[in-house]
Length: 160
Image (cartoon, rainbow, N blue to C red):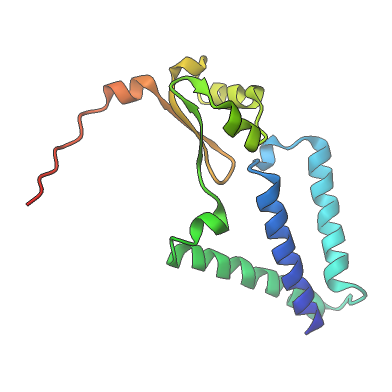
């Protein structure tokens, strides 16, 4: 039972750490950050299992973490109002070609990172962007000015 409680505490601690460290994709990590991530995994294992080297202990620890992952996934799916707290929310970082400095500061996002992500999607100049969004998973979505201008008009809604 102690192993299950330890794994549960570690899960919630990791969830808080992941939410607190910001939105960053694995591919955007520096080599040092990746080494820290691997080291954290080893430290977590030691903290959860302590001296228990048994297969049963490993099954209990992994099973407990999987349970919490599945439960949070289900709760986010079943109760949409919980989703922002569990998964995070998308954040607008560019509007009408202008980076939003205060938002970028909160997200600890540099202009270089933003421009690199835009270039990766074929956008040479931020002025081409109508709206840029940092998604909860750390990826960027960009809506170009030309995409908005070329879009067909929205159908009129008739209220009966």
